Length: 186
Ligand code: HEM
Image (cartoon, rainbow, N blue to C red; front, top):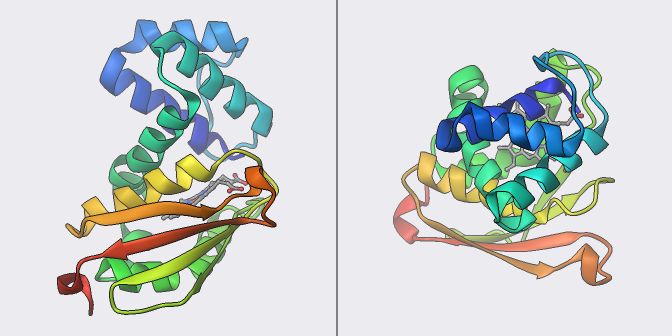
């Protein structure tokens, strides 16, 4: 994955726990990188090791780390560095979600080696939809939950996210049920 991902994990940990804790997490993960380069590729496995080490050092389940990271990604990383991309994708939560399937193709114009997830929206109503999440990477459903909750906060539209079909439980891909209040509908 592009270095921006590891960099954002670092930023989140340092913001809440300080740099010495981040150094401890990196050492535990066996990651010997001083500065992650946003535009360079790093093995996915490195990111998984950092999440596992953060889980051990902070004594929070890996799912909790990934969920917090999803929120952080939207509310800090994306907002600060890619605000234009975010705001172009929607004025409301439902509008943004409707554009999510095309979102990473815009990101890929800047980062051509991107291996993005694929999203699909079905059963769309004014206040709910089913979000289908396709990826070759395992274990990232909690990250998606955090991302959607971060989007809800960004738009001031509280949203509930429930994993209703899970790849870990044998489904072909993860499916989330998303619900928000009617006032958010465009
Ligand atoms: C401007 C905002 C965003 C940027 C720049 C961005 C960029 C990226 C990058 C660089 C990766 C790593 C993949 C790679 O390097 O090959 C990634 C992965 C991912 N992104 Fe985004 N993204 C953004 C917003 C979002 C949003 C809003 C969502 C969903 C609600 C999302 C969902 C994901 C997921 C789930 C992954 C994990 C990889 C996978 O599932 O295979 N991203 N994104």
